[in-house]
Amino acid sequence: MTDETRKVFATLLVAAVIALVFGIPLGAFLQIFSSKQQIDWAAWFQAIFSILGIAIAIYVPWRIHQREREEKAHEQKLQAHGIALLLKPELITLKGALERRLKSQEITGTVLLPTGLKESLDRLYLLGPAGGELLVAASIIMAEPSLPEGYVFPQHAGKLFRLHKERMQIALDSVNSALSKLDDVLATGKSLQR
Picture 1 (cartoon, rainbow, N blue to C red):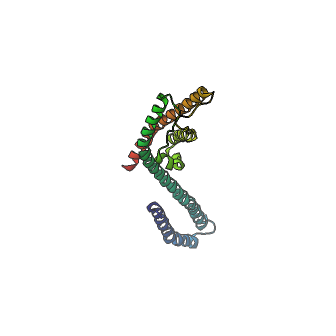
Picture 2 (picture 1 turned 120 degrees about the horizontal axis):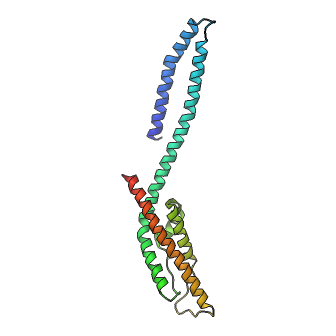
Picture 3 (picture 1 turned 90 degrees about the vertical axis):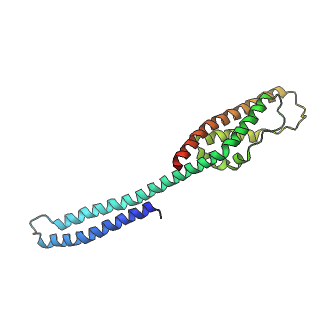
């Protein structure tokens, strides 16, 4: 149970005690001394406190649920910050590898997906748009066939080469976009820690 939940329950307990301490004697007093011709104050008093009780019964669970959502969102932002800190150096290295691959005239060998990125694939959603860009880059890199050195290209090697270059360019663009969006995630995480 969180401190916020304890405070809400403590407030409710105090309100209930006040209602009992003052409400029952006041209701009894009004019942005894009110005449039948005057307004039935005890009934009005009961109606007002019933409505107040219903309102409190609705507010308390709503507030508890709202607080839990806020705590979960805060925790996810902190996790996103940690993932961004882990991935940023790896993404800079990956960016360099993709740029070298695009400058070369070969399509043999492979561009390897960094270990941290590979291990974080199931949590990239926490990064928001940056995570989406990283999923695009990771799927392209993981789907890229690994051709051994000295591979003899078939007749359509030119088309294969162009297709390879296009995919590597898309992966590079996704990594560049993710790097710029990771800065936003890192800035948000720094503000949360203060």
